[in-house]
Image (cartoon, rainbow, N blue to C red):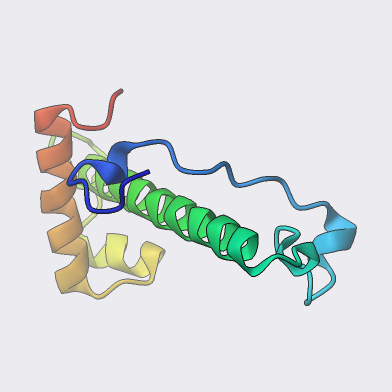
Length: 114
């Protein structure tokens, strides 16, 4: 994957493989990276994981914003204020307002693929 491409964020990164409970309980175990002896292979796999985690974070933030926008929708009878959303998400109220606006933009533009 070319890391300098502007749309690299939307490409499917390396899969985040499931960590079995016994492996994740070991603090030295992380996606089997500790078992890779070749530094070139280690760098490659660690870089793939870094891209995958960044992509997952970006996507999760988009879904947070969509949820915030939906919860703040004035058409909802049970709509939440920015302060309520901030409290639920452990954000500041200002950040909650920005996330609501971001989510509204995503919903309006259909950028979520829903």
